Length: 200
Image (cartoon, rainbow, N blue to C red; front, side):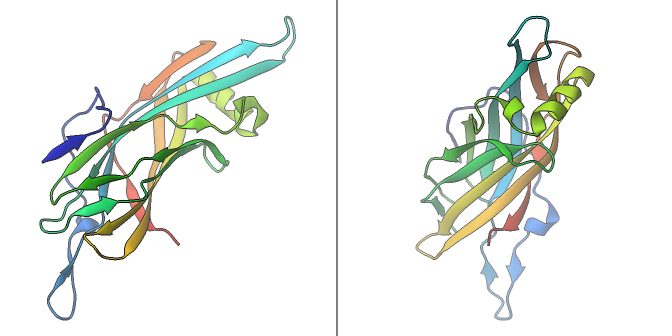
């Protein structure tokens, strides 16, 4: 069964979960539930350059992201309640987060998937106010910019205890028209599996 929230129009066929998402058997032979699986389906970033003062190098860079991803419950028996939702943020290499937004609570029955589309809000009025601004502008001249999408989920299996997981959808390449003062970039990959790690 599949539930969609803000359907992503560019969604494509699913990718199979990697092997490290298989059930783990305990000493008693019982299996513990598997963590949710995330596939990044789409990412669009519109970058605009504004000349603040004519005939000078004073420029302002702004950016708006739209990120689409699918969350899968791979378990056959366990439902998952995302009671506290989570968060999506966009970063550029080792720099701090450039934009972030929350994920509303939702519920998944066993073997259910949910597609979400979110719009991370810029943490800076202008990206040029951050150290990443100059580097992003230089990459835009070459027509390729790589961003990282970080996703945090807070959830519980059935009536069990709460869990937190972080997912990294790293090195996501967006393509632009080189030397275009305003850019509309899309992912090179049609979809991308995200790696998870436990949140401390």
